[in-house]
Length: 305
Image 1 (cartoon, rainbow, N blue to C red):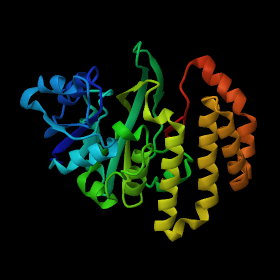
Image 2 (cartoon, rainbow, N blue to C red; image 1 turned 90 degrees about the vertical axis):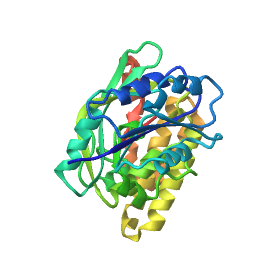
Image 3 (cartoon, rainbow, N blue to C red; image 1 turned 180 degrees about the vertical axis):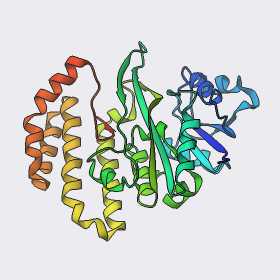
């Protein structure tokens, strides 16, 4: 299978990390056709760092508009038939693209391939956790319900066909947190998903990550669900479970952050939508203690808490 892959690296004030990200893309065993860095209005030394790579990459600067707009801009500026996204503070293992491209060759119905991920401490480099359980085949329902294997770390683990990306309409720029989950769901509604069960992405954990803004996650995932049910009447039967699980995930996030008002509000909504969540909430303090004892960051259903 002969393919041409475009790599999109959106960045905002990640000058101290972006060289590693670019080098990991350049170091792939299957070289990408093009690597485009979309600078979303950085005020640090990102431009100077990118310039050191010369014509091995393409650098585009825009006014700050958010990661979704930056990714969409990158796709519009490229021509590869496969598209990969790499966050500027993360890195890839050398065989990431090679192994994902091989998955596409197995089944013409596949529109997206994701892979396992290693989370590491952004200060020490220590491995915090490995995520090696991902969904394959028809995973749209699992993504809608946050139930069962989903898409691992969708921001930087996915490789999608341009056709699938365009069919889905690209990233929704209204969503500030969870935009990648939303895109993956819209692709999965139309096409199969493949998975490489190896940690081919190194994801940097730091407190500045967008997923730590729980209010943005709450708004983004609410919009995701609103769109999903408005666009497809055939899934109406899943609405109670989907919203029950959505509020359960939010409750867990607020609890971990020590925001107990948000925890109680969402726990109540989860139980109202899906009473079966009661067992989850009764066991929550024990789960929290286990996570604190083993040092692993909270992560549930593909959504980092």
